[in-house]
Image (cartoon, rainbow, N blue to C red; front, side, top):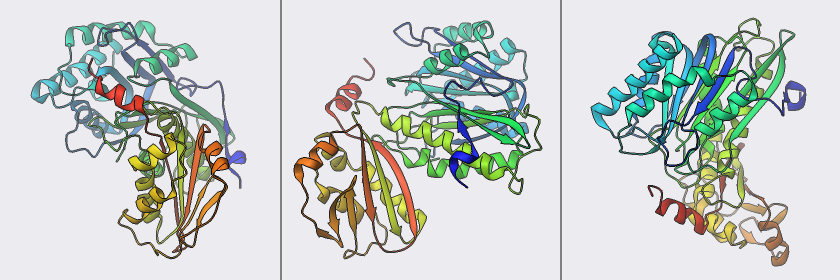
Length: 410
């Protein structure tokens, strides 16, 4: 069964397209410009919720609060997000501020505190100006909307160094009822998730069993968000939250449901599309880079090798310079710490074979130059050592990446 037959993309859809969801955003003064810096997604009913978080030892205060909210009942009715300040490495005051955000949102929205998640992104080590945050949260109910403009304002509110918003929506049939799955994300730098400054939110009106949603979210994250890198830095604030309203009125989904395969495929498409969008919008990036590794001893081994190649500064620099320097690719393969037969590796840049059986193959340098100057560069590595395969996404390393991050706080 092909992917197209399982679900279809809804080009005009957004995170408010699934039944029961509203969203909005506004400027409360966290950013120096007048751009939105506070937003919320609100569900009209308690939604089944699942989340994954950064594995960075220094986890931002909002993650603790969100963990507690979801753990209290496995459901959420709102998530409130600020940009411009990460509220990370801010000690007891930072924790108190995260709880205060949740309390203020509960008061403004008329919800229980444990039904609310909070998330933050931006500069590490600075306390939130809670007077501005509290005033902004009090104004959120007035800007919430189920229309696309509400989703647009939310997407703008979560951006930091991002150049573009990231969103996607798909539709499928479950129990002969239309189900929508949508997502929105932010991320451009400090991207090397292990679950960058990455935040992502998925909404659906499907009814899903809580344990099934958490397991699906974890498994999907491993092959989507955890397979991207921009700069090799895992953020203190990475968080991915999924909310299922159940208002599509289908029988609760779980493995064994006739439509579970279709739902899982559509859910993966949403996450993979957002992950690729983050990689493409890497700070200073000019090209999306996709690395596929086949023939590894295991899928886990293929993932490790693919992320090593995509994360190599030398490979990324070569792509920026449109230099078909395959030596950097095979060197990255060899240092990934995974089983590799040094006599059997093939490498292709797009359709251009540059290595076969670990031996150089003459190729047209001009053809390779033209290919590497394109918007998307694919690198294919076949190890001929097993059945494991994986794909990772990243971007080139440019002068602008250094410029952006050299002046991040200014």
